[in-house]
Length: 351
Image (cartoon, rainbow, N blue to C red; front, side, top):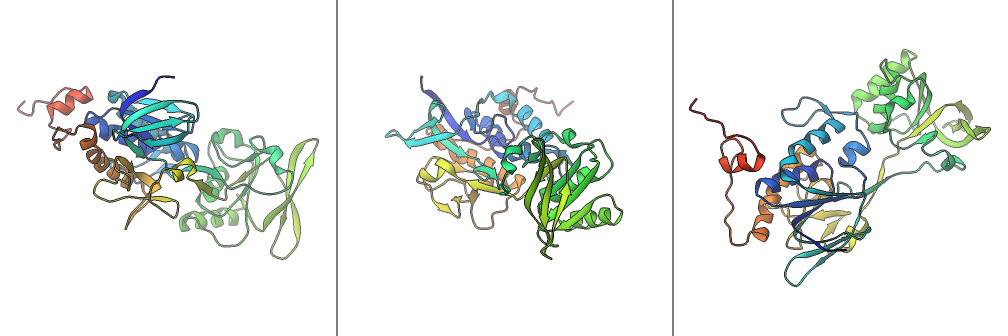
């Protein structure tokens, strides 16, 4: 297989990785983007494609799917090459300063810069460890909601006490296209890690008999003819109750794994990559980290923070890509050069 030469390789196709393509494109830096998922969007698509996001500047509300679709449209002019369903296994610095990047599927690239935008790394849901449950994964037991319509009209049990558990419980309990026949929320204690407004709404729906909340832990299952028909819930009083169901949704958070990134010689702090805030470069010159995977004093894990980091990282990368060229800050509103890059007409402000 031939080696692909490029200016930049972006590891991670979530919102920040996609916006990194845009910021690099404005500086005429060509990029290839690699993600272990089979589609772009990262956590926005994998975990909450239909959940509303309210803190994207100038966009009052959008879903994770809509944000991804708009970012993909925004970067179209730059012709980035995607390698989806591939995990980067090797990043090795060459004698000439470039990086040899290789994926588990054998794709090889030679790049001047590397941008790690891998969110929390390779993330996997924390498994509900109850004997016999594994046999029902993706048929009656779900750790993610990809298609809400498949739960409409069903008797649902939702386990967990964080935002995902509460958000989906509220979604399926209330009137709408995805309303379930019944919703029972199970959590080990009568306290939650979710937004207080969601908890208050859940209690309101319970009082109105639109859903139920049970304090306890799932300790066993019931099956009939190879189908999951119920879970056994042991309460704090020591009593075990049988709760019937059609489908079980489990949300106990994610277990982030850096995977091969941990072997690349980068400075790490609590499984996050340490960067400087001028260009978000790591301790390895030419490798940058943006988004949730990096850490620095005052770091806030917000999409908009990642967008800011991507902009400064692009300017930090420019000297590696164009060592003999002075890169000036230009504005997409007024720059004819950027208009050409974006494929738009330069407006005539004298008209």
